[in-house]
Image (cartoon, rainbow, N blue to C red; front, top):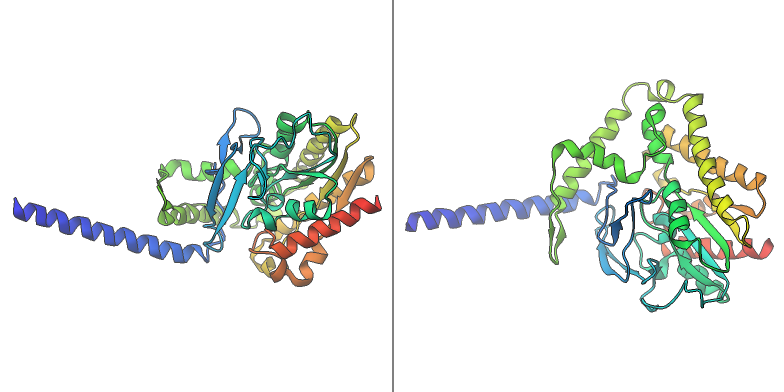
Length: 355
């Protein structure tokens, strides 16, 4: 019996050491792994509609950024599912009908949300500092697509009174279209591609209290998804996978969603600001030609929509941010540093005053 317990004890120690080493190596490798996984996060919850998920109410978490820096940033949400600063009150009635102040609503994904930084270094927070006469609402959510952002406006924000401006900035569906080409579908988004790839592997989610998610499982998932991405990009993808029909479908999808949003606000005194997707110059070599083309096509469609419709403005900061991209962005994708967010907020303020 003594031998059994001794063997059992040694086995447990060996297993613990192996797990520790796997976690340590994975943590280090993740610092150099720029693959993103898009799933329901601990500050979001699933919905039974086209939003797929939304922010949790009155939630606080020190989110660990596994993707790039391995550091934490604070996420706090209000009772009305908005990202707020730690200086704000979670239960304040930001969008209550009794609040008659003029409002500025940010819609979109992780960039206007301020992923990777505290709320105090996000575009909405700086914009609020420069425009104290406005109630600024951060209604963006990381990993949201164009369709999800507009669906969220319809489901959660449409009834809000005195919204004077809506700011919309998104990345998706450009990456999905760049990856899938003629196989791209209008329902593809950040959330479902990795799920489709990982589903056959039956990888469980392990979330350890205090510690959080397993670095090894996170790295393994990213490795599988990255291999799937590479397989999609093998061969002469640029000439065989993309054609005029797929490009037309992509543009029509964008215009269809913008028309939906424009229709929802047409009887209101609301102006729409369409912001370009901005990516750092220092990561240009890591982007495929198909992704560059998809981003350019997305921005061009936004710009053309602003020319054809009243009360719609196009806001392009790509050039300004890339004067010093390493100071303005925190990662290879598109997420802004506090300096980048401050510059965006300042130029956005100027745009409003010139209209």
